Amino acid sequence: MTVSVVIPLYNEEENVEILNERLTETLKSMGSDYEIVYVDDGSTDRTMPLLEELQKKDDNIVVLCLRRNFGQTAAFAAGFDFARGDVVVTMDGDLQNDPKDIPRLLELIGEYDLVSGWRKKRQDTFITRRMPSIIANWLISKVTGVGLHDYGCSLKAYRREVVKNLKLYGEMHRFIPAVASWYGVKIAEIETTHHPRLRGKSKYGISRTIRVLLDLVTVKFLQSFSTKPIQFFGPLGVFFGLAGLGVSVYLTAAKIFQGIDIGGRPLLLLGALLIIVGIQFIGMGLLGEMIVRVYHESQKKPIYTMKKILGPGR
Ligand code: UDP
Ligand code: MG
Figure 1: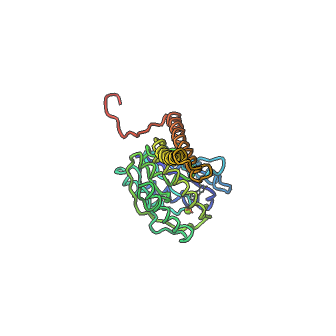
Figure 2 (figure 1 turned 90 degrees about the vertical axis):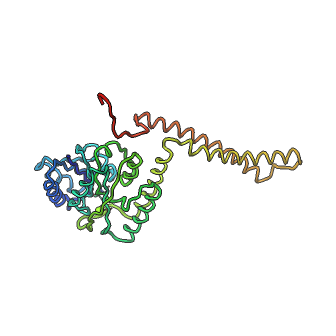
Figure 3 (figure 1 turned 90 degrees about the horizontal axis):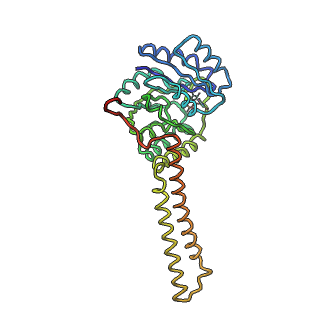
Protein backbone atom coordinates (compact mmCIF):
# COMPACT_ATOMS: atom_id res chain seq x y z
CA MET A 1 0.00 0.00 0.00
CA THR A 2 1.42 3.39 -0.98
CA VAL A 3 0.30 6.55 0.75
CA SER A 4 -0.01 10.12 -0.55
CA VAL A 5 -0.48 12.87 2.00
CA VAL A 6 -2.01 16.00 0.47
CA ILE A 7 -1.58 19.29 2.34
CA PRO A 8 -2.81 22.69 1.20
CA LEU A 9 -0.75 25.61 2.45
CA TYR A 10 -1.57 29.27 2.32
CA ASN A 11 0.91 31.53 4.08
CA GLU A 12 2.12 28.93 6.56
CA GLU A 13 5.82 29.90 6.63
CA GLU A 14 6.08 29.36 10.38
CA ASN A 15 4.61 25.87 10.16
CA VAL A 16 6.07 24.27 7.04
CA GLU A 17 9.33 23.02 8.45
CA ILE A 18 8.05 21.60 11.73
CA LEU A 19 5.12 20.07 9.90
CA ASN A 20 7.40 18.35 7.41
CA GLU A 21 9.66 17.09 10.16
CA ARG A 22 6.84 15.54 12.22
CA LEU A 23 5.00 14.17 9.24
CA THR A 24 8.11 12.59 7.73
CA GLU A 25 8.93 10.99 11.06
CA THR A 26 5.48 9.38 11.28
CA LEU A 27 5.43 8.23 7.66
CA LYS A 28 8.95 6.76 7.85
CA SER A 29 8.02 4.84 10.99
CA MET A 30 5.08 3.24 9.17
CA GLY A 31 7.38 1.57 6.69
CA SER A 32 5.23 1.77 3.55
CA ASP A 33 6.08 3.83 0.49
CA TYR A 34 4.78 7.34 0.69
CA GLU A 35 4.81 10.77 -0.89
CA ILE A 36 3.91 14.13 0.61
CA VAL A 37 2.11 16.42 -1.81
CA TYR A 38 2.37 20.01 -0.62
CA VAL A 39 0.06 22.36 -2.47
CA ASP A 40 1.09 25.98 -2.17
CA ASP A 41 -2.15 27.89 -2.63
CA GLY A 42 -0.66 31.16 -3.84
CA SER A 43 1.18 32.04 -0.63
CA THR A 44 2.70 35.51 -0.49
CA ASP A 45 5.12 34.75 2.35
CA ARG A 46 8.10 32.39 2.41
CA THR A 47 6.04 29.19 2.24
CA MET A 48 7.03 28.39 -1.37
CA PRO A 49 10.81 28.95 -1.05
CA LEU A 50 10.79 26.81 2.09
CA LEU A 51 8.92 24.03 0.27
CA GLU A 52 11.43 24.19 -2.56
CA GLU A 53 14.26 23.72 -0.08
CA LEU A 54 12.53 20.70 1.49
CA GLN A 55 11.85 19.15 -1.90
CA LYS A 56 15.51 19.41 -2.92
CA LYS A 57 16.49 17.33 0.08
CA ASP A 58 13.77 14.68 -0.13
CA ASP A 59 12.46 12.74 -3.13
CA ASN A 60 9.36 11.72 -1.25
CA ILE A 61 8.17 15.32 -1.45
CA VAL A 62 6.13 16.73 -4.32
CA VAL A 63 5.35 20.45 -4.40
CA LEU A 64 2.49 21.87 -6.45
CA CYS A 65 2.51 25.63 -6.72
CA LEU A 66 -0.80 27.24 -7.73
CA ARG A 67 -0.60 30.54 -9.59
CA ARG A 68 -2.75 32.43 -7.14
CA ASN A 69 -4.83 31.77 -4.03
CA PHE A 70 -7.64 29.52 -5.26
CA GLY A 71 -8.88 28.35 -1.87
CA GLN A 72 -8.55 25.16 0.12
CA THR A 73 -10.96 23.14 -2.03
CA ALA A 74 -9.07 23.88 -5.25
CA ALA A 75 -5.79 23.11 -3.50
CA PHE A 76 -7.13 19.69 -2.43
CA ALA A 77 -8.38 19.07 -5.97
CA ALA A 78 -4.92 19.80 -7.38
CA GLY A 79 -3.38 17.44 -4.82
CA PHE A 80 -5.86 14.69 -5.69
CA ASP A 81 -5.12 15.03 -9.40
CA PHE A 82 -1.40 14.54 -8.86
CA ALA A 83 -1.39 12.06 -5.97
CA ARG A 84 -0.10 8.63 -6.89
CA GLY A 85 -0.74 6.62 -3.73
CA ASP A 86 -3.27 3.81 -3.28
CA VAL A 87 -4.49 5.75 -0.28
CA VAL A 88 -4.76 9.53 -0.13
CA VAL A 89 -4.62 11.27 3.24
CA THR A 90 -5.53 14.95 3.60
CA MET A 91 -4.67 17.24 6.48
CA ASP A 92 -4.20 20.93 7.35
CA GLY A 93 -0.79 22.51 7.11
CA ASP A 94 -0.97 24.43 10.38
CA LEU A 95 -0.29 21.49 12.72
CA GLN A 96 -3.80 21.60 14.15
CA ASN A 97 -4.15 18.04 12.90
CA ASP A 98 -1.64 15.59 14.29
CA PRO A 99 0.37 13.43 11.84
CA LYS A 100 0.47 10.76 14.57
CA ASP A 101 -3.19 9.98 13.85
CA ILE A 102 -2.45 8.87 10.29
CA PRO A 103 -1.60 5.21 11.11
CA ARG A 104 -4.94 4.85 12.91
CA LEU A 105 -6.81 6.17 9.90
CA LEU A 106 -4.96 3.81 7.60
CA GLU A 107 -5.74 0.79 9.75
CA LEU A 108 -9.40 1.21 8.89
CA ILE A 109 -8.87 1.87 5.20
CA GLY A 110 -8.83 -1.85 4.36
CA GLU A 111 -12.37 -2.15 5.61
CA TYR A 112 -13.68 1.28 4.64
CA ASP A 113 -13.20 3.47 1.59
CA LEU A 114 -13.14 6.72 3.52
CA VAL A 115 -12.09 7.34 7.10
CA SER A 116 -12.88 10.76 8.52
CA GLY A 117 -11.29 12.41 11.55
CA TRP A 118 -13.43 13.83 14.31
CA ARG A 119 -11.94 16.70 16.33
CA LYS A 120 -13.82 15.75 19.47
CA LYS A 121 -11.85 18.10 21.68
CA ARG A 122 -11.60 20.90 19.21
CA GLN A 123 -9.17 23.66 20.12
CA ASP A 124 -10.83 26.68 18.52
CA THR A 125 -12.87 29.55 19.94
CA PHE A 126 -16.42 28.60 20.89
CA ILE A 127 -18.60 31.42 19.59
CA THR A 128 -17.06 31.99 16.17
CA ARG A 129 -15.86 28.48 15.33
CA ARG A 130 -17.12 25.59 17.42
CA MET A 131 -20.74 26.64 17.81
CA PRO A 132 -21.38 27.39 14.11
CA SER A 133 -19.66 24.11 13.33
CA ILE A 134 -21.90 22.09 15.68
CA ILE A 135 -24.98 23.53 14.00
CA ALA A 136 -23.52 23.08 10.52
CA ASN A 137 -22.58 19.45 11.17
CA TRP A 138 -26.04 18.69 12.47
CA LEU A 139 -27.66 20.36 9.48
CA ILE A 140 -25.37 18.74 6.92
CA SER A 141 -25.95 15.31 8.48
CA LYS A 142 -29.73 15.81 8.39
CA VAL A 143 -29.89 17.21 4.89
CA THR A 144 -27.46 14.83 3.20
CA GLY A 145 -28.46 11.79 5.24
CA VAL A 146 -24.79 11.02 5.94
CA GLY A 147 -24.24 11.38 9.68
CA LEU A 148 -20.79 12.65 10.69
CA HIS A 149 -19.81 14.65 13.77
CA ASP A 150 -17.18 16.69 12.04
CA TYR A 151 -17.48 17.44 8.36
CA GLY A 152 -14.93 20.24 8.65
CA CYS A 153 -12.03 18.09 9.84
CA SER A 154 -9.39 18.05 7.10
CA LEU A 155 -7.72 14.92 8.43
CA LYS A 156 -9.25 12.17 6.33
CA ALA A 157 -8.06 9.10 4.47
CA TYR A 158 -9.48 7.97 1.15
CA ARG A 159 -8.93 5.05 -1.11
CA ARG A 160 -7.56 6.33 -4.35
CA GLU A 161 -10.69 5.63 -6.43
CA VAL A 162 -12.77 7.84 -4.17
CA VAL A 163 -10.85 11.04 -4.84
CA LYS A 164 -9.92 10.30 -8.43
CA ASN A 165 -13.53 10.43 -9.56
CA LEU A 166 -14.50 13.57 -7.70
CA LYS A 167 -15.23 16.96 -9.20
CA LEU A 168 -14.92 19.65 -6.56
CA TYR A 169 -16.34 23.17 -6.75
CA GLY A 170 -16.74 26.14 -4.41
CA GLU A 171 -16.03 25.18 -0.80
CA MET A 172 -17.03 21.60 -1.47
CA HIS A 173 -14.17 19.66 0.06
CA ARG A 174 -16.04 19.26 3.33
CA PHE A 175 -18.90 17.58 1.49
CA ILE A 176 -16.75 14.82 0.01
CA PRO A 177 -18.06 12.21 2.48
CA ALA A 178 -21.66 13.06 1.61
CA VAL A 179 -21.08 13.00 -2.13
CA ALA A 180 -18.93 9.87 -1.90
CA SER A 181 -21.53 8.06 0.15
CA TRP A 182 -24.12 8.55 -2.61
CA TYR A 183 -21.70 6.81 -4.91
CA GLY A 184 -21.81 3.88 -2.52
CA VAL A 185 -18.57 4.48 -0.63
CA LYS A 186 -18.20 2.98 2.87
CA ILE A 187 -17.39 5.57 5.54
CA ALA A 188 -15.98 5.43 9.07
CA GLU A 189 -15.33 8.20 11.57
CA ILE A 190 -12.70 8.13 14.33
CA GLU A 191 -11.68 10.58 17.02
CA THR A 192 -8.50 12.46 16.26
CA THR A 193 -6.33 14.86 18.19
CA HIS A 194 -6.72 18.57 17.59
CA HIS A 195 -4.22 21.21 18.64
CA PRO A 196 -4.68 24.94 18.95
CA ARG A 197 -3.08 26.94 16.17
CA LEU A 198 0.27 27.95 17.62
CA ARG A 199 1.80 29.78 14.66
CA GLY A 200 0.36 31.86 11.83
CA LYS A 201 -3.22 33.06 11.46
CA SER A 202 -6.44 31.22 10.68
CA LYS A 203 -7.63 32.00 7.15
CA TYR A 204 -11.31 31.84 7.98
CA GLY A 205 -13.89 33.65 10.09
CA ILE A 206 -17.58 33.31 10.83
CA SER A 207 -18.50 34.30 7.25
CA ARG A 208 -17.52 30.83 6.12
CA THR A 209 -20.68 29.44 7.75
CA ILE A 210 -22.81 31.20 5.16
CA ARG A 211 -20.74 29.88 2.28
CA VAL A 212 -20.95 26.38 3.70
CA LEU A 213 -24.73 26.62 3.98
CA LEU A 214 -25.03 27.81 0.36
CA ASP A 215 -22.89 24.90 -0.75
CA LEU A 216 -25.14 22.59 1.23
CA VAL A 217 -28.11 23.83 -0.83
CA THR A 218 -26.20 23.04 -4.04
CA VAL A 219 -25.10 19.65 -2.81
CA LYS A 220 -28.62 18.70 -1.75
CA PHE A 221 -30.02 19.89 -5.04
CA LEU A 222 -27.44 17.94 -7.01
CA GLN A 223 -28.01 14.86 -4.90
CA SER A 224 -31.75 14.83 -5.32
CA PHE A 225 -32.36 16.26 -8.72
CA SER A 226 -29.27 16.17 -10.88
CA THR A 227 -30.42 13.15 -12.81
CA LYS A 228 -34.14 13.93 -12.78
CA PRO A 229 -35.00 17.65 -12.73
CA ILE A 230 -38.41 17.19 -14.32
CA GLN A 231 -39.38 15.02 -11.35
CA PHE A 232 -38.72 17.99 -9.11
CA PHE A 233 -40.13 20.88 -11.12
CA GLY A 234 -42.82 18.85 -12.90
CA PRO A 235 -45.10 18.15 -9.91
CA LEU A 236 -44.82 21.77 -8.76
CA GLY A 237 -45.78 22.92 -12.24
CA VAL A 238 -48.72 20.55 -12.43
CA PHE A 239 -49.92 21.61 -8.97
CA PHE A 240 -49.81 25.35 -9.70
CA GLY A 241 -51.15 24.89 -13.22
CA LEU A 242 -54.16 22.89 -12.06
CA ALA A 243 -54.90 25.32 -9.23
CA GLY A 244 -54.80 28.19 -11.74
CA LEU A 245 -57.02 26.27 -14.12
CA GLY A 246 -59.55 25.61 -11.33
CA VAL A 247 -59.71 29.29 -10.44
CA SER A 248 -60.10 30.29 -14.09
CA VAL A 249 -62.86 27.75 -14.76
CA TYR A 250 -64.72 29.00 -11.68
CA LEU A 251 -64.47 32.62 -12.81
CA THR A 252 -65.49 31.78 -16.39
CA ALA A 253 -68.53 29.90 -15.13
CA ALA A 254 -69.47 32.83 -12.90
CA LYS A 255 -69.20 35.17 -15.87
CA ILE A 256 -71.18 33.02 -18.30
CA PHE A 257 -73.89 31.60 -16.08
CA GLN A 258 -74.37 34.34 -13.51
CA GLY A 259 -73.26 37.30 -15.58
CA ILE A 260 -70.94 38.51 -12.81
CA ASP A 261 -68.32 41.02 -13.87
CA ILE A 262 -64.95 39.35 -13.19
CA GLY A 263 -62.63 41.94 -14.75
CA GLY A 264 -61.63 43.63 -11.47
CA ARG A 265 -61.43 40.56 -9.21
CA PRO A 266 -58.12 39.76 -7.52
CA LEU A 267 -58.89 36.07 -8.05
CA LEU A 268 -58.54 36.58 -11.79
CA LEU A 269 -55.00 37.79 -11.30
CA LEU A 270 -54.21 34.83 -9.05
CA GLY A 271 -55.64 32.35 -11.55
CA ALA A 272 -53.63 33.77 -14.44
CA LEU A 273 -50.49 33.91 -12.30
CA LEU A 274 -50.81 30.29 -11.19
CA ILE A 275 -51.20 29.08 -14.75
CA ILE A 276 -48.12 31.01 -15.88
CA VAL A 277 -46.07 29.82 -12.91
CA GLY A 278 -47.17 26.25 -13.59
CA ILE A 279 -46.06 26.42 -17.21
CA GLN A 280 -42.78 28.02 -16.11
CA PHE A 281 -42.03 25.22 -13.66
CA ILE A 282 -42.61 22.53 -16.24
CA GLY A 283 -40.47 24.49 -18.69
CA MET A 284 -37.72 24.71 -16.06
CA GLY A 285 -37.91 20.98 -15.52
CA LEU A 286 -37.48 20.35 -19.23
CA LEU A 287 -34.60 22.80 -19.49
CA GLY A 288 -33.08 21.05 -16.49
CA GLU A 289 -33.38 17.72 -18.27
CA MET A 290 -31.47 19.11 -21.23
CA ILE A 291 -28.77 20.61 -19.05
CA VAL A 292 -28.36 17.38 -17.11
CA ARG A 293 -27.93 15.41 -20.33
CA VAL A 294 -25.32 17.85 -21.57
CA TYR A 295 -23.59 17.66 -18.19
CA HIS A 296 -23.39 13.90 -18.07
CA GLU A 297 -22.63 13.32 -21.73
CA SER A 298 -20.04 16.06 -22.18
CA GLN A 299 -18.03 14.58 -19.34
CA LYS A 300 -18.84 11.01 -20.27
CA LYS A 301 -20.06 10.85 -16.70
CA PRO A 302 -22.01 7.65 -16.08
CA ILE A 303 -25.09 7.78 -13.87
CA TYR A 304 -23.84 4.77 -11.91
CA THR A 305 -20.63 3.71 -10.17
CA MET A 306 -19.16 0.25 -10.44
CA LYS A 307 -17.33 -1.69 -7.75
CA LYS A 308 -15.98 -4.64 -9.73
CA ILE A 309 -16.32 -6.25 -13.09
CA LEU A 310 -15.90 -10.02 -13.38
CA GLY A 311 -15.45 -11.99 -16.57
CA PRO A 312 -12.81 -12.95 -19.12
CA GLY A 313 -10.52 -10.15 -20.28
CA ARG A 314 -11.79 -7.66 -17.70
N1 UDP B 1 -5.63 27.11 3.22
C1 UDP B 1 -5.38 27.12 1.85
N2 UDP B 1 -5.96 28.08 1.08
C2 UDP B 1 -6.80 29.03 1.61
C3 UDP B 1 -7.07 28.98 2.99
C4 UDP B 1 -6.46 28.01 3.77
O1 UDP B 1 -4.64 26.27 1.35
O2 UDP B 1 -7.30 29.86 0.85
C5 UDP B 1 -4.98 26.09 4.06
C6 UDP B 1 -4.24 26.62 5.28
O3 UDP B 1 -2.93 26.99 4.94
C7 UDP B 1 -4.28 25.45 6.22
C8 UDP B 1 -5.62 24.81 5.90
O4 UDP B 1 -5.99 25.28 4.61
O5 UDP B 1 -3.26 24.53 5.94
C9 UDP B 1 -6.68 25.16 6.94
O6 UDP B 1 -6.76 26.55 7.09
P1 UDP B 1 -6.95 27.24 8.51
O7 UDP B 1 -6.06 26.64 9.52
O8 UDP B 1 -6.83 28.72 8.31
O9 UDP B 1 -8.46 26.88 8.82
P2 UDP B 1 -9.08 26.59 10.26
O10 UDP B 1 -8.25 25.50 10.91
O11 UDP B 1 -8.98 27.88 11.01
O12 UDP B 1 -10.48 26.16 9.97
MG1 MG C 1 -6.31 25.55 11.24
